[in-house]
Image (cartoon, rainbow, N blue to C red; front, side):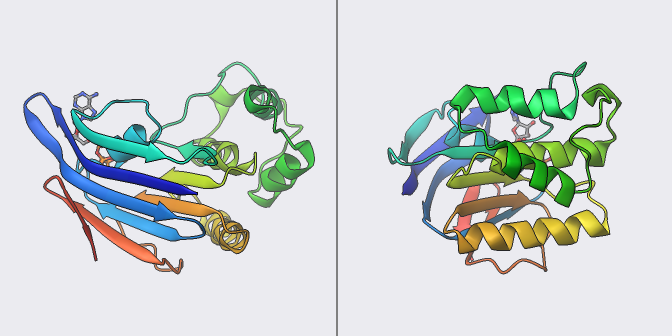
Length: 200
Ligand SMILES: Nc1ncnc2c1ncn2[C@@H]1O[C@H](COP(=O)(O)OP(=O)(O)OP(=O)(O)O)[C@@H](O)[C@H]1O
Ligand SMILES: [Mg+2]
């Protein structure tokens, strides 16, 4: 498994957001990208997911990469329940393990059988659903953009535990945030500032 960004640049409205960044992720690593608001963290994730194209540079994902991602505010089918949403997403790649999903849902303090529409979910509840969909299909590379935003203390502790378990399973996890996440033991740190991504 390998992800490699080489010399990626991206300009939005004549502003150079990413300036020839190089980045590589190897199996089983927990990687942290730290950068302030507007530094380009979400843009890097969108480039890895090929949602947006860089102006220059190359993105390489090896064939065995199965990406899971939570980027910014995830969209859901707003007038349907959590069960309807997660099983719909699970049908796309047909790797839906309902038992695993139910377990994740309950660990994060949600109720799989709650009929409440997603449009009525609180910010933290939506964030949890976003985390679940990024990891529920045994994805081996997981991109989490500000994943702890809106999580309460209990959910945060459970999230940290889940990340630890995924690392034990040799999943590669890349977390972007503006602050440091002291409770997680990262293998690699990068800082993103003025378009430059630097390993630190
Ligand atoms: N599609 C777009 N069109 C124009 N500008 C964009 C677009 N996407 C991002 N930008 C700009 O690129 C910069 C980086 O945005 P990005 O969302 O990657 O930052 P971020 O590090 O994720 O910030 P935050 O911590 O606030 O989430 C910002 O100045 C943003 O306005
Ligand atoms: Mg962002």
